[in-house]
Amino acid sequence: MADIFERLIKNYGPIGQHRERAHGYFAFPKLEGEIGSKMMFRGKEMIVWSLNNYLGLANHPEVRKADADASAQYGLALPMGARMMSGNSDLHEQLEAELAAFEYKEDAILMNYGYQGIMSAIDAICGRHDVVVYDAECHACIIDGLRMLPGHRFVYKHNDIEDCEKQLKRAQALIDKQQSGGILVITEGVFGMAGDQGKLKEVAALKSKFFFRLLVDDAHGFGTLGKTGAGAGEEQGCQDAIDLYFSTFAKSMASIGAFMAGPKTIIDYIRYNIRSQIFAKSLPMPYVVGNLKRLDLLRTQPELKDRLWKNALALQNGLKQRGFDIGKTDSVVTPVYMKGGVEEATAMVMDIRENYKIFCSIVVYPVIPKGHIIYRLIPTAVHTQEEIDLTLKAFSETKAKLDAGAYKVSEIPDMANK
Ligand SMILES: Cc1ncc(COP(=O)(O)O)c(C=O)c1O
Image (cartoon, rainbow, N blue to C red; front, side):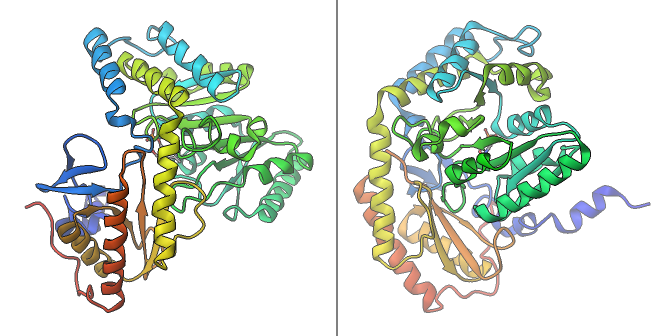
């Protein structure tokens, strides 16, 4: 008989296999100091492009005060127990009502975390005869939610409406055969890696041909897109066609928690059937109060979103003018596509960090195909034009070095914390 543990430590997984050289630098780095456009990394101050602190709320003085006051007043314990049993409060319900109104929906339910929340919501909503049709590039939390699905699922090619229609036809045929079940389509408002918006309007238009409900994970659109910041549905003018709107608080809100908004009857059903909330302690009060404050700032300080977009466009246009390929982003998420091996990519990141004092994250094989490198830059409302200019200069110089083969190394540089 094999020892399960033995298999695990044979290789440590696709990223873990590099941990002896990478830990603390390329993986699990520690950014220290106040959250902002500049932070400390291994004792050096760096311009940071890796945080989803889109609106700069993480260190907004009103947010910091609300968080501190609520922590002093309530501590982290209150309320105790799951909401269904003993952990409910007026403030939890107030936050739900305000989120629902912000998203033009009847009701909303709070979740402790986005990842487990959406997984568990999918589990609560779908039965064994239901069929889910979903975009191929949906976030891991949706894929994991689908792993619990007792019914069938059909994936469509990323943002490919023709294929979405094809999969809807398959789903419809299966349901006709079963003579029971319904269809849930799941996609995202903004795909967090490439920054392209989900084609919500086109997907929603398929409702004229098929009967389905639409669930949208708008983690990156919430607070950044739409006239009021209500997200990708508002931006594309199809918020009403989104039956269930989901977002985490981990990005624009710079906090913890998540919510799902939709019709009162359905949110009530989820409230009484979502296992990750029913069998878990509710969000501690400082998170609830802190999230109420953040939502208030989203509503009352639209200049935060304006500043975010000003910076995002300056960065994106600057990259394009310098000949960089930033793909098809139509959100503030800014990918930069380059070619090179994993070793080269790590040597380049080292140069950018050590010599240009710029901290950004890369995505390499096996997350994306071999030979490709994606830098993923996240602009925020608190970056400055000077920081953008320095970054553009650094990218131009390091790209020239990459093209000249200056980063060709045989192994990942050893930068691990020893
Ligand atoms: C699209 C998307 N959905 C859900 C999540 C998970 O949210 P949380 O961090 O609140 O668990 C993330 C990442 O944070 C995400 O990018």
